[in-house]
Length: 254
Image (cartoon, rainbow, N blue to C red):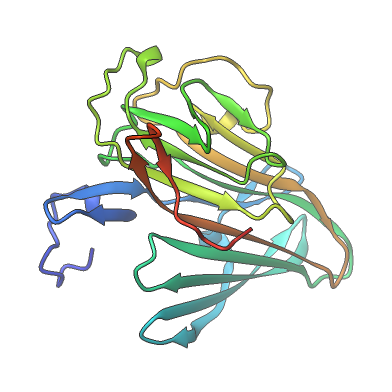
């Protein structure tokens, strides 16, 4: 949080990333995302390595905010431009992100796009208690998610009995929703980012620091002048004790 905010506390890292304040304390919901373009050599081109071309406010009102930023990078030595949009409605528990990638070079280029986080839901700095969740069930083991049948997933600070944890955690939850059109080819909840795209293994979510959720689009090929756009909604879900599951807000994404 900005230091001028009266709620800011330099010692409270739960305020970082995306956080929820319940009137008493902050709960960590999302951390800094691990994101970027992966080229044919498997090198991750993270946003901070892209050339920055500018940004601006496209819409600003009492109810809505839309931001845009523009970037350029080389993917397999071919120049591509990236436009990133953020849409937020006042009072929403989520924001919508759109990313458009355009080949501005003279030859085709191919890549995958990766988006993931070890969100430390509930308390900053620890994955203890975190399990995955889908619309109809909890995920206590590493799981590949069928992105054609599912359109969202999340992390829930609930306690994993397979990791020897009792249900004494904060019951805060997050979610990420993807469009079924141009959706990710892979979605995964695991103990390790390196397992993205690998076959499902029935291993308990037990890492103290790295219970992760990750999406991957690809492999994508862009011809000169062509573009690829994907949209996701990222935010906070609310625990429903009747269902014993989190429930995400309606986003309109699908």
